[in-house]
Image 1: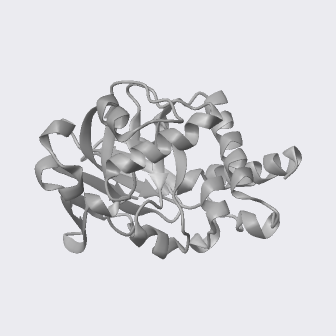
Image 2: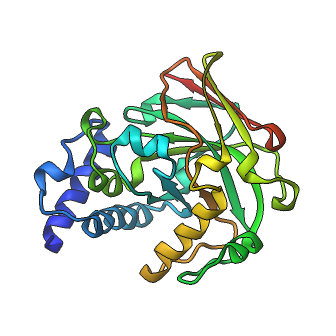
Amino acid sequence: METSAVRDAAARLLLAYDKGEPTAPVIESFPEATVADAYRIQQEQVRTWVERGDVIKGHKVGLASKAMQQQMGVDQPDYGHLLAGMFHLEHQPISTASFLQPRVEPEIGFVLGERLRGPGVTVADAIRAVDFVVPALEIVASRITDWKISIVDTIADNASSGGVVLGSKPTALSDVDLRLVGCTLQIGGDLVATGAGAAVLGSPVNSLVWLANTVGPLGVDLEPGHVILPGSMTRAYPVQAGDTAFADMGPLGTVTAIFTP
């Protein structure tokens, strides 16, 4: 894609954010767009948000589980940026008006204590860099009408990022095997899904390694203090005003998100 087309696509998505109205799929308007072009579109939006005063606070890996890939009709993970304005406090009201077509996903959030710089990051490097993990709920949202997304669309739309709620119980990696961590997800008091850490690329740690080695060649480091969401342990489930989403991750603790009009 020409630079002008990248900027045009980014502007359309930014307008959807600003007006609260979804837009047509990027791939329909720009059928020549590749995955590489989609990341350029994403970066263009991130630059705009930073220029407006927001701050990058981490990254997310999307579509890391088979359940999510099947739900979205794609065959590979992607990544997006987490900015300060996306973080919400647990148990505090979250306005659904802030999101388009919101859904929730239970994830194990990494908080880094050391910088990770790919390529060449190993599992050992990743484990050493993690300060602690916390239970998390990611709020995914789509600026694409009716979630009719291709891999190009979701990447361009910052990996369908919306918001993040972190639990308040930190756990050292040495105290838990993330592959074996089970999860139950309730919405409105109803059990909607169960999952396990192994659903995320075999282990959420593998997802962290994939991310560091994918963004490293692009000149992006994962910084100390950054939050990394490695991917959902279940499918994504819609939420609306009045819903409470609650995820129980056993030894990692629980996390709650309360949605209001």
